[in-house]
Image (cartoon, rainbow, N blue to C red; front, side):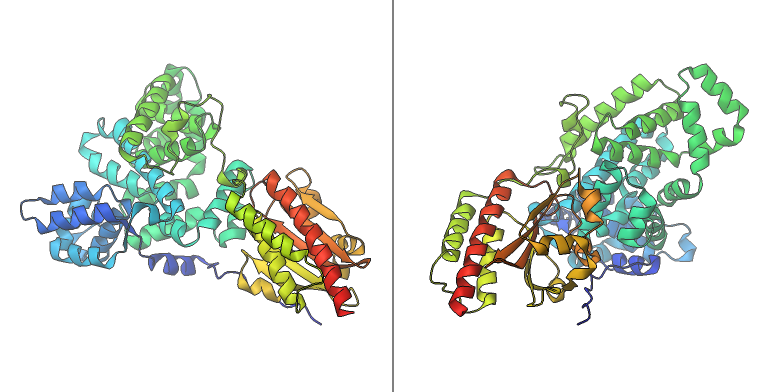
Length: 511
């Protein structure tokens, strides 16, 4: 029998497809902000500036208004609006009200946390830009403010529609140091910078947003030269080296670079203040501002605290929190944090299900009845993704009987045992294998490709079960890719023993 193909969750793999999909996403607006803005628009005493200030509490609303205004900008009006107040003026209050009514308004805690966290980074970047650059470049404060707030906005709809992809990217690239190009092509089919630049241009966002992505994509050599100069501890030497390279000096001193500097600082601080990327962006900022690194570090910490006062939210991480931690402690990615142990209620349900598995004579009418109860017991003990496979009578194939936490297409999977040495070993005699970061590289390569695609995890349990001296079932389970909780691992082992006894009792009854 041929292997049935698993169709993965539909994700775009080309730039055009991504732009089309993300352009169609309507970002949710916090209900409180929505009501405030709606009331202000209806109040004839409120100016456009008042309304714009109220809208700033919702980055999604700012983006929606800017996109709408720039989408309808005619050639006679020239360049797209660079500020929210200009966008409101072009749209008019009537069209702004209609736009507002089309947007979903949700309570804060109902909005996807990945989206809220990313928008918090954008708000932090805007505060860094205002504190570091806007007072020095007062004429350009609007461009600095709105450009820095919207720089990461092409990722907001991605955080809403495919949060797991962004989380996987952060875990693999930022925390594990894998090559960004390879990971991005694998996860998205395209490079993230290309996607962000394409969306920024499609939405006609402020020009400084596209400028930043252009710099990161095509002008990295100049950025590297500027960083090399910034690393020189002698400010006089820095100036001399800039004078020797006037093309670098002219390029680096462009005001548009402030948007990238602020977002670089905010993103890097989100990982940890001792993250080497933070120091690089601080060095570049000190070169841009012609001030010492110590001053820049003090200023960035102050701006982080100011941002936290305005934007910190329960359940979200703000880098200002880390200023209170031991200095070299970094924020762990949630994929590196073990999930909480099962609740007392869940463990109570688990014990009840295990007791039902142990009833003799077997109460199960068929194998599906038994494996359904087995699946429920494994979920109750804390397993978030799992697959139960049963072998055929000839021990040549494994067919899925139950799944949980996996795409529905996974239920059709059939695996030939002879094509995998790991499956051959597990099906030769009852055994358990626990994948960890230490042995993952060794064993993950031995997993069948379909299983590896479904369980992209460094923390995985595989256990084969026997009945009457013959291996008949394979359990595969994890806790969403996170480190496994000890109590859940212990419960998994006890559940496997109960399933084995249930299988034996069932087969003996059938006999």
